[in-house]
Length: 487
Image: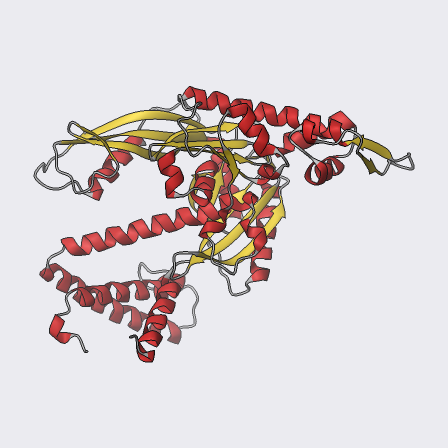
């Protein structure tokens, strides 16, 4: 039976581990909104939301930044509201979602012949294989955003999910390469940079949304993620445990709002309000004798809008979007019952009434709404668990995936080092720590702002000291003898 002291020690270890986890921020630059969410994983692997802010997006159309100044103002407004929720929060780096008409994808194949065939395949060799794909020829004016390995092969053995630890002469893989327009990417990076932030990574929005709403069972069964945003509808298809296809459909919630505005002769704000409150994706489900009364302009009489006509307009545009989804699924031969997980609808547009029924009718696949609440800790704000914030939550998960992969790589490197090398590194760590301490004392005595430790910025010396001490502690713990453990 666990004693009180053991319970306190366990809770202390969990708290320490939680504090060691980095705070990662996802920034969703969308057509209708810009959202920033800061999160950190707790001891149970769930995200604790530490800050949340959003602002209306005026400088973005169809997922592309067209007005950098307006986009900067919106990003800064979202950050200010994030700081209002948590004044102690400090945001420097962000994971940014990217979408738009300019996004394209292609399939490639890559192989490398190994030099040391008797050794096991290492992570370095896989990294080199992936890095080679960044030299793939793409059209002038485009830029590679991401290279995603699909199924690996080792010699004559295909369909290997992870080849690390295998032995063989040749290792290769099929790759899904995502590209985008250089100018569009540059505008996003400039907007983020001029907002005082650093872009840690650009992530395709449907992949981020998929990480937030998709489980391992969905990945195995095969699903299509349909993220209905303001300017675009993003599609990501997963089959047999890998990403098979991505596409960006050039229609979204803004197109529906504009259709209502033109079709019913109302203001855009009125069209948006009617869509959200009374809209339906199935005209057959709308009551024929129900009307919406909206105020007239400049003393004109109020206007009555038929709910049936409103639903007809919405259904026409949503049917067009779902026809695009069916078309793309046919492109990869997955338009039939092969996707046992069906379609997961997410994004702000997924909350239209009766959209599930329309999707199932037009695609022939089961459909459901994807919420990101599965990854959130229990005390989250309910607004954050809405489908419109799936991309932001997915960006944080992407950041943690990168962080955990680096931690595993560091651990693997430790295991490869012999004891003499580790003792040498430990001595180097001690000497560096002493040198940094001496530099800190000298800096405190010197009031000149421009003086910096050699090779270490003033703002980063404490982080470097903690990092070096952490390496030293890991090394000491790794080689501690069993007799040294105090019972």
